[in-house]
Length: 118
Image (spheres, rainbow, N blue to C red):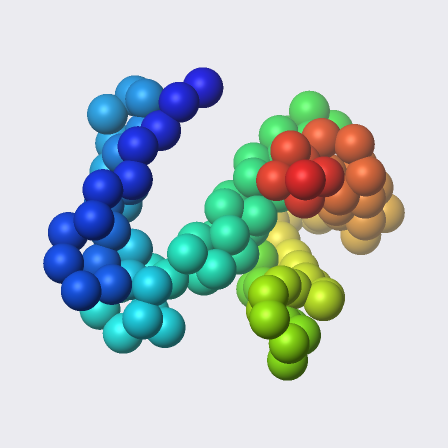
């Protein structure tokens, strides 16, 4: 897997994936586009949601929506890495089992989500 990031102007950068898709990023705190650290949270949310939806569908759960609210806390020293990231899943559907949702979230976090495991 390959990617390229090119400086656009000021603190704006264009990231392009090997498949040709692009994302504009703003290293100035996300004032004009998604910041690189916001992108990490979004990538984590997407990756884990893919797992959760797939696992629930394979468990024959009748889901109609999956929303994940993500809260990341960063340390105060440089480098300002994340010290904690919390994901709160909101699953909507008919007759969805809480037990199945808990299992799907745990499997994503512990086994399947490449972004989380990195």
